[in-house]
Length: 70
Image (cartoon, rainbow, N blue to C red; front, side, top):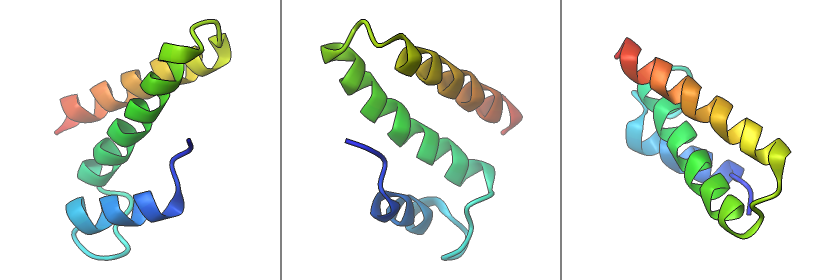
């Protein structure tokens, strides 16, 4: 399952300052958290998928940097 456009609009509605706010740190962190959750579930059943593992680690590092910024 991928992170869909509908899920992104829901994240923006919940955490954004307005309906088109995709650049604020809060929205970026919430979107990364949702993507990380989806990829974590994928990795549980596909533990040898090293390309997705690398992407997951990059997302976790980016979220950590944004959280540190806040």
